[in-house]
Structures are given as structure tokens and as C-alpha cells.
Length: 342
Image 1 (spheres, helix red, strand yellow):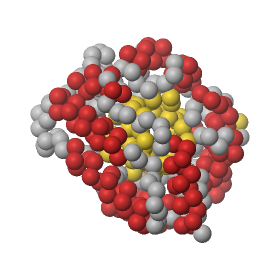
Image 2 (cartoon, rainbow, N blue to C red):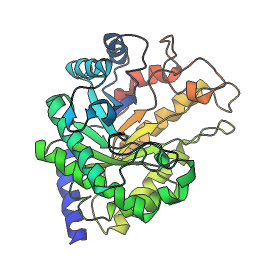
Image 3 (cartoon, one colour):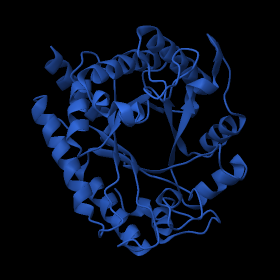
Image 4 (tube, rainbow, N blue to C red):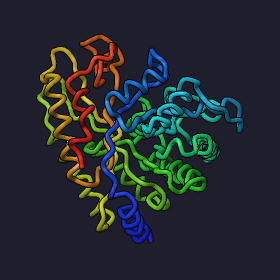
């Protein structure tokens, strides 16, 4: 029955979304942005960004049990403005709430570990879906479940029990959203395309009854770079192709699994073995090759604006533009990205 459900799911999904052109977007941090939401949207429009991805943390909207209110004012304003300007938000429903799970060294993000917490998380997702209505059409359930386990729990993070717990969260949350609006696109996973332990974990999640019958795609995070090596687009593209083949064989399906590369990036740091031109060329190649595959439905560069000015710190330098809003070569490429895809 599970295989039949999966086949039906894939055939149905292919008919409703495969005609859509690939989405090209960026990750953004509206809350920590130094300017106003209007300024951020102005910048996004200048670079022809058609979609953004950002967090909508649970703890910010439910500060007393079962009482929900709009979260951070700056974030709320940004979502309103970006949506009004035709830029589609991907909202990540994520991270714990200390009302239900205490953050600790063993569980630094307060991941749900009980049915009660999962039920509460689903209620937050339901409220969020009603709150934003037509302003948001895509939700991602949690961000990097595996990486959020903490350093003491690396093995447990990719265990079967971890997969089962995440699957329970996915099933309850996805169904809560679809009950409000069946047209909402639901993404899950946010895993690597080539890490063996993460792929085993993802397979266990997808194998749980009720996951594939609800979700609309798999979220992949791909950081295929080393500052000491030249960039290789093929090292990024090939694992995605292999993952598609693996999932089709594993679940004995004829269709393709929709992939959404919700994070991909390369930092422009001093002393690296690649240049800013190399980053532009790398993303251009990855973008066009993913588009040819047909089953990569969207790609979001991480991120839009550099987080700092230290050119030796890679975490400061993932943006397509600098903190002074000056474009890097990849920024100009993103501005023209839609001309490169179907």
C-alpha cells in the first residue's frame, strides 16, 4: 500500500507542478537587516529575486500556551511587503518553544520529543497558515533537523528514532496545513544530497506511512565547496542526479521526486582557491544544469547580503551583495538568472 500511495503521489504531483518554471530565490534575514523592510524589498526587486526563504520561529508567536499573536514586527512587515510585490516567500516553520521543550546541550533547538509537543507545533503551523493566507504558498517543516541535534548527539540525530520523530512532526504538521488549504506546498528534509548518513535518515523519514502522501517536495542543502579547492559544479550536480535515481529505485517509482535546493552557497573569502568570478560561473553552471534535469523545482542561494565585513570569516561572506549593497559578480548573474532557465 505504501508503494501504491507513493506512485499515485508522484503521478499527481507531476501533473500539477512540472509545467512550472524553476524558481530562483535567495535566503534572507529580515530581522537582522539594518534597514527597513521596504529597503530590503527594494534591493530584492533590483536583483529580480522571485522568491525568498526565511524562518518564522514558533517561540515568537506562541509566548503563552495556546495564545497566538503575530511575531517580530519587522518580520511581519517584511512578509506583507514582499508578498505584495510579487516575491514569493518560503517560510520555515521551525525551532522549539520553551513552553513545551526546554533548550539544552542535548537538545539545543528544542526539537519535539513527545506527542504533546508535536501536537502543539502543528497548532502553531495551522495558526500561521491562517494568519498569512494567500501571502505564503510554500512552507518548509523545520530547518536542518539533523544539524540541530547538538554536538553530543551526532549519532542519535541520524538514527531511526530521530527519523520516526521527524516523520511524526511532518505528518501532523503537513495535514494541519493541508486541512486549511490543500494548495500549500510543503517541503521537508533540508538534508545533504551526498552525505551517506543523512541520506539513510531521509530514506527512513520518507518510508514512514503518511509522509509521501502529504508532502510536495524534498528540501536539499548543498554546500559543495572547500576554500582550499577549485569549485566543481559536477560535484554538486552529480549527487543530486544520484539521489533522484536512488529514491526512484528504492521506492520503485516511474516518476521523479521534486527537489527544492533551498540552500546552496559559496563564501567569497580571502585566500580561497577560487575567485568571485569562479563563484558566479559555478552558480551559472549549477543553475542551468539543474534546470535541464526538470525535477529540481527551485534553487535558493544562501544568502542575499553578507553577514559581516571580515573577509577571512566565511560565515560573513555568503551574500550575492556586500553589506554596503554592492553587487558581487554572482549578484549580477542572479539579476539575469531567469534568462538562463526555461
